[in-house]
Length: 487
Image (cartoon, rainbow, N blue to C red; front, top):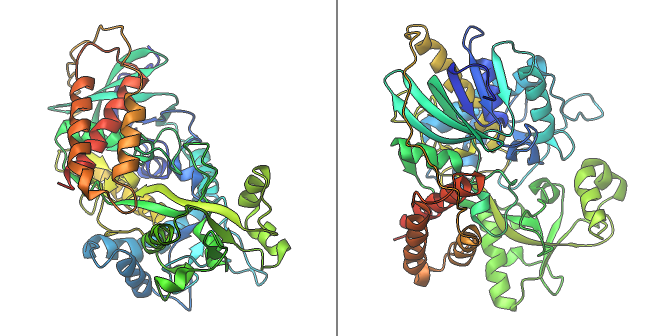
């Protein structure tokens, strides 16, 4: 047994910004288990470069402007209730990052915070730590969480299955090929995105949609899973599945987009040029690609002061230098790739699902704040605001909870044969070819039927239940739900 305790008041699947922030806001008398699929520092939150959007001590900005920019980016399909919560509570959570958890943001020469601009924003409201904001936020949250005596963080631990019980949930965990069943009164899913369903993504290796699959199996509603954001400026080396993101903030600081002829082209597609929202820019690149017959595109900020570029984007500058490109001297190759999920596990304003005592927050959840397209740097904010609200809701409910824990039952899997090789590769290829920036509507049904066949193959009880099997099952479930929404 890799965990000494069997029963917990709250189990949190996911150790990114949402999972850790929830743990930090749960009452100290509750026993909490946080699961990290790999090392706790590997998550999509840590990869976030641009920053966190919000109106905090901002004399030239207000929450209605922030809300309006979010509505415009989301094509006015945003949930008005949760959007108002997001923008109005941003100041509270950004301040708490700084004052309670030691998170640092860059400051200007006058001592005020150096807020930056990104696509879709009408004001400079992005708090950042150079170009490693997510990593800095995660550092502060992780260090603070590790000081809590009531919280256990179990790294390299995957939740394989969960069943509902009268007192909450029983969860089957997998670590180093060993299984263990633990119980909880409340379950929070904060497992991040689904990027590994695609051939090319900015997401980390853990982003296989596990939480969405578990929620689906528990009976939670999955909504708008086909609302997928493709980031327009991922580094295009065409050699690795995980594409290095070149932050939206680079365009916010004045970078140009250029086509295969090194010509600027955004004026043909949108008056906001390079500062249009991500979905608009990605569509423009694909349309320009069709017009020119080339997938060669470039991001160019070489006309700006070199020292300022290196200071503002040290991580991006160094990463590109390792790939043979000097951001201060030349354009760098970019192309859209999968980046973020706007849909997911349907939740209310306190991150609650329709399954009693099941909560979801962060990228795996669908709060509706983003509408059809997420405004840049609203993702970290959403993760904080709604994970805190989930913790606050659980704190109120847990005051009257019974101390009893019921054991759930899991049908044992004794198979030793691994899942057939190539299933996950085929799933990625299907999504990449049929549901990219502009969907291939003629072949969606054929793609859906093939994914259905793969799900049926995976569902056989004849495969060894290891991490490869679980991730294939999660990826197939997500692919199925994405394509089903397109029929």
